Amino acid sequence: MNKVETQLRDGPPSEAGSLDAALAAFRHRADSEGLVEVAWTEVDTPVGAMLLATTDRGLVRVALSRAEEDVFLEDLADNISPRVVEHANRLDPVRRQFDEYFEGKRTAFDVDVDWRLSHGFRRDVLEILHDQVPFGHVVSYKELAERAGHPRASRAVGTAMATNPVPIVVPCHRVLRTGGALGGYGGGLDMKLHLLRLEGALLS
Amino acid sequence: MGLPAFQTVIDEHGPALHRYLVGTVGVHDANDCFQETMIAALRAFPSLRHGDNIGGWLFTIAHRKVIDAARARDRRPVPVGALADGSGGGRELPDVSDDGLWARVSALPTKQRSAVLLRFVADRPYADIADALACSEAAARQNVRAGLRRLREELA
Image 1 (tube, rainbow over the protein chains, first blue to last red):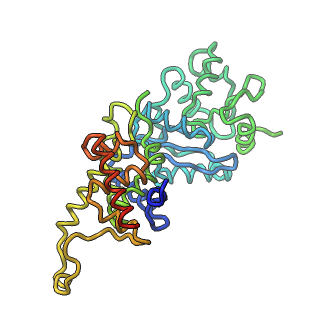
Image 2: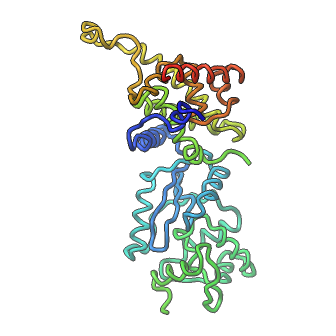
Image 3: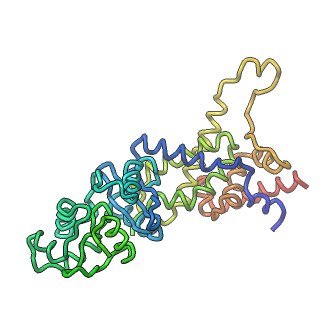
């Protein structure tokens, strides 16, 4: 390759931070024109960075690990709208509540939930969990199945928990096996333990 | 599958798009063109039928915005004082300055400039360049060659 091509490929001289400024201006305008149908951002927690996404109806998706970013974005594009744009400001109120929760200063989330990513029985179970099992309490898969009117559906309740689109705010970490065994958790059992200890639901 | 999240379009093409615009319209107008391109793209995005060549599509929009910006610049009123001292009239060149390459790039004819920048700065295939410039692939190649030849001669 000759010198001119090499220089061209290196790109034109630009002021540092110029792309960031352009992106920030774009995000601001996109949002003010109502084009950001799904806004997402990252939030730091003591158990790692998580991802949050909101629509104009409410919090629609929480990913328990930044490593899930690709799936997280694809899921939102396929099921809500492809107009998915990172926009931290739109999630400021939620991020603040996450901070307070993980600092032990908040026992309930005051956040509207957009339930669109959950359907049928799974959604019924998640809404019951969200409405009826407060901070510091736990419930068994079986008991949740009973509350949903299908006492033999513990397994389906397990699936509902595993596919919870809004963990933490919809508290699937409060669901244990009958007898108190931990069961599973999308973010791993260490995270589940951390959350239950944070809420004072486990003594050991 | 359908379309990806627009965020992945920003992540994949944003930096190259911005470099392309800085090379084409200069640092000052690049941010405006970037914003116009991305807003137009985000607005039209859900109506794309598939996500097969989003890069080509995005740079086609960008080229249109570059032409719009050039027209707006030509229409921009010239301050009275600027005319009196003989400066500021005519087409303003993008405010890039270095050892001369970028100033010469900005002085290329519009099609050659866009073709060269799309090829080397934005790394687009010739088919995309043809789409963006609304010409044949052969004409796209020819514009790249002609632009490169001129730059080489001027910098020799």
